[in-house]
Image (cartoon, rainbow, N blue to C red; front, side, top):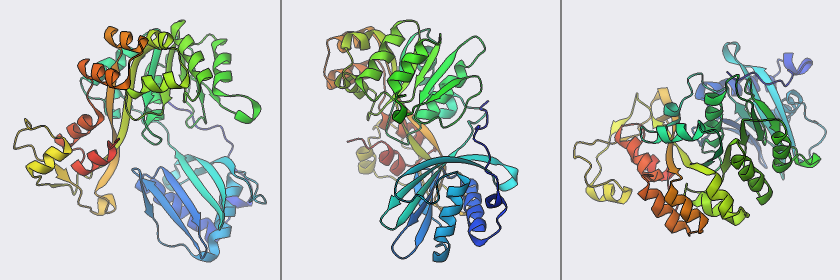
Length: 405
């Protein structure tokens, strides 16, 4: 189970203040918790300000707050996050821990950014991992789960999770780590930043200003006798080289990479400067992922889809005529959005002997993608449409989430 953040709770008058700004801040946090928001945005403008919540990947604006409360609201958040309230010219980062509705303790990462109309604040809710986190709950299907489990249970090698920012890559890596987290393993991570603290796992937060880069931290971790290493992101050649060498010398390395799909990860690492022979020897599995919104079970409604629309969406002709997709409607239970929660859709590319030969050649991206298909990998769009077929999401959501053209 994840341990609470070690950031100390702020003390002093700010915590007991019962002024209008304090009440508005408390109400905003309650709304964020009730609606399952991942982020809170406080945004200034020329004539006022607004508060928006990111819920299931989409921003929703709250009722307009009183213009006179803007400065007091921003100051309160900065005081609680232990930021310099006198500094408004440079970005600042902080953390805070607060007790919200029903006595629930929550951690937040706070970013303050100077804009032409004042400071913009972004609060990221650092939620604890669900206790039942599993490959199934992450969205891996019955064909993908054995491949992923075999890769992360291997004694050594590199497993990559790819996708854009906000696609749930870090949650997937944390889930993998929790599956491996036993007293017999030494697990270490390098992250930027550490979002959720995991009990029994040694986590290092990158600090570029002091020279603690991903590569420097990774080298240091290799002297700590690790069994499993998690790299928050492979960004450069140096980090890639150290990660690949670690994966070939008895360590299991889990990492993220920013690519549109799984086959593109190979070309991306080679472009960064990774040697193809090292990559072919170290790589075990690549997964690409997106998050699709779940239809609200209270208000979802059947949707009539013409044959032309099915073909445009990529729905195979062999799908039976009684296959009924659903669409979002909106009700009080989902605050009118038509969706509640999100689930991952995945493309899982195993590294077969034929794929290793292609990587070592090295082959172009089209050849890698063709071999992935030959090895049984489905596309992200196909995985998303499977979620349409079981009533989890809508066709519109599946298309929007997997549009990587």
